Figure 1 (tube, protein in one colour):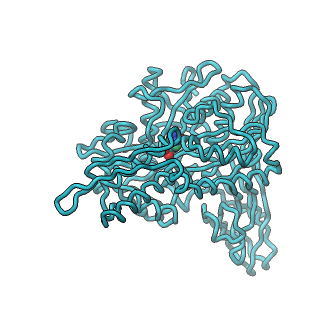
Figure 2 (cartoon, rainbow, N blue to C red):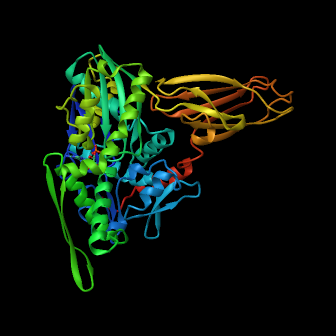
Figure 3 (cartoon, rainbow, N blue to C red):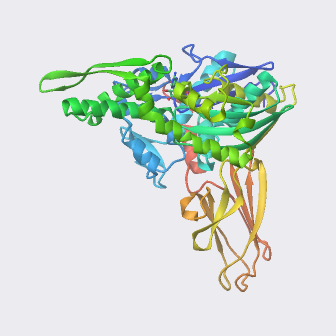
Length: 524
Ligand code: AMP
């Protein structure tokens, strides 16, 4: 940290992002260049070669759907062929393509752009907002991610920050950040549950706050469940109704679909406060020389019927987290809601029903995560006076593939991080000279069902009968939740150290070349 440099805290959300800093002991939100406290996580590329970010991008999304990228956080660190992406590809206006390593990329005209770059453009804009606020360069940040982001998604988020010219001092989990802001504000010792549903992800986290020690007990969730799924249910309903009435399939019309999507999201928000909402989309398409319109009333109860299963999908995650922490639901003192989607009354009543008490309703669900990130920056920078110790956990078990597709766990999920665990392995053949180590993250006993992180080879093992060599494999998870693996053959002393990233993500040289390209942006 430079002597006077400010460290910013960034909540890089699926639909909205927010940046905050610490003023004395208090976290404060920094307004964006248009004066708003949150910024839509949207990037648009105009035909004039300009890049627009936030509201400017959002405003022309309808007229420019193929060049407007939404919810890129749902793509980051994922494969083109993954079931989540196959489903998402049908719904978005922009084109997605596969990179040579199977990662997902976005195609804008003849240019292929990685999700890391698009997130990087959003982060650069937020950095610019902070620079305007302080009147000085900003180079360091704490960035939040969903607790359920795996190693690839965390690394990709860090790469995005590098592209934006930011050094990430710490990656912290969004629910943990929220609890930091809540706990420091209330100064209360409590067992707290954080229910976090934003635009694209759902996390449920249990914490114990005790005299300034924030100990995460367990976390569970779904990195592909969020507000967008609720919007999509309304879109599907509108498209279906239109088909029934007009026999026209609107899914083929990108412009119409974009308008329906926006109207659906607006109606959903409104229905958190009213019982009925009118969806009015004149001139949605034309047929047989006449213009057709959508005019529908959506009631709160219809919305609840369309999305009830999405809300119910959160309950096994909550139960899983309670089981892992060995806590009964009636022992939770406070339930904090984070993320815009938690404003939905059905979510509040479902949670209240489950825990037998209503959630706390005086936190700002849109800003609390960025505020927590700002507090974390104060902890790292030594500007927080109170004793605060944050002990987070890893959301996934980590291990390697052994014989017959077996997954050998090395670090169990919900282990406090940073952590380091070693295990010994041996060869299966006589005179085997090398061992393949396949690193995976997940909970299945079958290796192929877990997420591959990397494959590496430990070479130069001394010839010996099968089962004799002893190879120690050490797995480390750092405070950012990132994985490092190190293997060592005890006899030969042959070592192999890897940073877990080859199966996916940008190589160092790719990242460097993107950083160079983004140093001179055309316009933002
Ligand atoms: P976040 O990523 O936390 O900004 O959450 C954004 C998600 O919250 C989007 O899917 C929004 O549609 C949703 N959202 C925002 N406000 C409301 C509201 N009043 N009722 C229901 N959902 C909302």
